[in-house]
Amino acid sequence: MKKPIGLITRGKTATNRLRRVDNFILMYEPALLSSGKLGADSLFVDLGYGFDPRTTLESAMRFRKLNPNLKILGVEIDKERVAAAQPYADDKTFFRLGGFNLPLKENETVRLIRAFNVLRQYEEKDFMPAYNKLMDYVLPNGLMIEGTSNPFGSIWVANVVRRLESNSLLFETHKQTSETQNWRFESLVFSTNFRLGFEAQEFQTILPKNLIHQVVKGNIIYDFFQDWIQASKETSSTKTYGFKQWFIAAAEKLAHKGYKIDLHKKWLSKGWLIWYQ
Image (cartoon, rainbow, N blue to C red; front, side):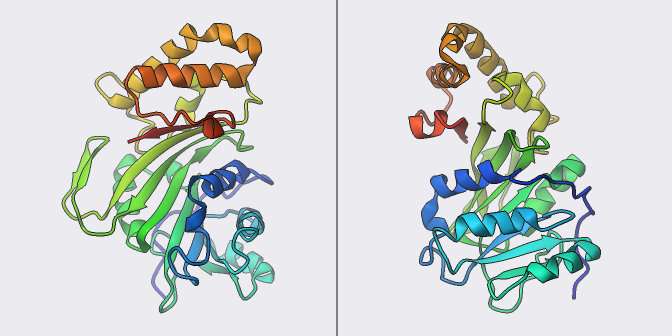
């Protein structure tokens, strides 16, 4: 077995911390999880599930309502965590020791990777190598959702990344380009359940690793937050009707400013702002 690539995380989590992530995936592209989209046996991978396998098992419960035969792999770099998870394994649920070099067996393929609260502890220079390694395992048209949440998952921000069908050039995103990468950033998703109210700047503290240090003048993510904060001020009267209505109004104002925001109410009314890249 190859030595796992990566670092041991703190591993702390909470029940249902990633419920909104799973619910988002189920709405964003349900066909990805259905049996026929990318092969009946292709895996959903929960990378870095933590000190116990609850996030993996919770995802299994949610996703298998759509696809009862979905195979799920929980990956951890800590041997003790993997050993502790084994009593929960079955013929469709696996727990293995691994890192960014996923511990796949022969003929196993991956349709979706979820990597949450993993890369935040790394240096920014480690971000792209980790992505390149992980996306090598994903089937064409498959996805990875990678990001950071607060401790209880009430707010989070994530990159949604698409594996391309060919080795076409990756367009310039966040000032990073490559002639060999076979994936692209598809969207940046901001999620809130409104329990903490709504303040655009709150999302800055949980940006993915490729963006959290880039909120400085001259970068698009800086401009985005400045415009979102301003849009929030301009629409603040709508909070009389609730934080949800304020969130929607600010998103609509952002779209008017030229950002590619998905304005479908099915997203905004549930607290998901999708910014297509």
